[in-house]
Image (cartoon, rainbow, N blue to C red):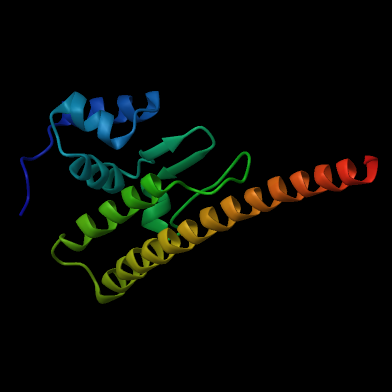
Length: 152
């Protein structure tokens, strides 16, 4: 199902908001449109609208359109679960668009599967980091006890 058509003025405003660096959700609020509608229109206009932005990580519409998923820059950190879920929402919304090619459906399903796997691996990673931190703390305490025993 299609929403209301975009006027030339709305397209101009969309371009301005994208140039200002507003993300799809912010543009949607400003224009009274769904973020997915903003994403779709930006994609059709060849604009690179930001879907999610954290300090050093940016996910854009063109990144999803090209199939690359996440874009990491700066510190090389991992995308948050929230960012992964935003990619998931966009991919699921895209599956609702009629007339997608079989290749596009397959790509979107791969993105969805990838986000699920990423979320699980990230949870494991965070758990391992916690265990590693606890081990370092225990090693420090053990070293302190050994020194104390040597001084007795």
